[in-house]
Amino acid sequence: MAGFETVQKRVQELRSLLNYHSKRYYEEDAPEIEDYEYDQMLRELEELRRNLEKEEDFVNYCDRLVNE
Image (cartoon, rainbow, N blue to C red):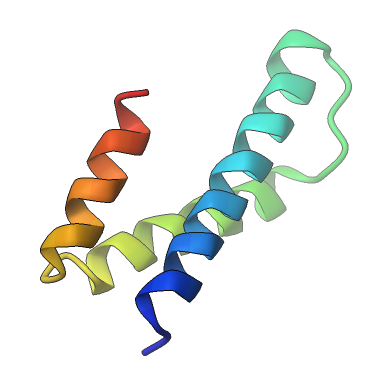
């Protein structure tokens, strides 16, 4: 399993990408990627969380991100 900082960085990257592509799709009606690619990124983000739920700091970190 990757280190916490590496995972934290990937979570941030995925969130940024998902937010960007959501805006392109829903607000600008100008998608840049296929739905499948978006779904893959979302699944990866969900998997990171599931795999690291035992890490209390990570769970708290993700909760803060979701509630921003």
